[in-house]
Length: 112
Length: 110
Image (cartoon, rainbow over all chains, first blue to last red):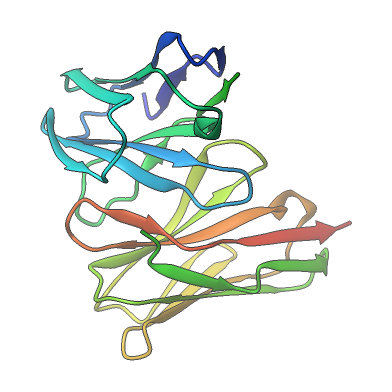
């Protein structure tokens, strides 16, 4: 299995809702990432997990809460989001070093 | 934080022509990677060039890296309509941080 699987593909949520994004990989990669991408902009790094531990938080607001239950799973819990948080959320994994990243197809999030 | 600037921002060519995209970055890197993104979808890793390499080829792709000028270029030869996508350079700072450039939108007309 050489894929990163993200669910759901689309999500519409209200500003008072709580929802979660899920990401899964079975390539044995040690690092997993969350990126946020607005339309016609490059992806922006949010969080990095290395060996299931949070290693980088790019000053992301606390309404985004990452979780790494095991080496294959990465979640992003969402609470009290704002309309400006609407974006494509991308998950990626990597073994690091001279290996590239494998990206999922993303979750398109709309906050209403 | 944004590390790389790409130019041109947009490029339109005919099938069969070559497409060249340039990337400039600001700090020392471990390696530089190029990705393709079809509209609204995930990114696909194309090629990685290490900081001690100057040129790398993969099929119709040729990447160069000039660390003294902090710049890289991606050449796609004999382009096809299926190459239509956004292309991003991304710099790996050896800290698990992969930072993307601004991107080039390539349109290849049949």
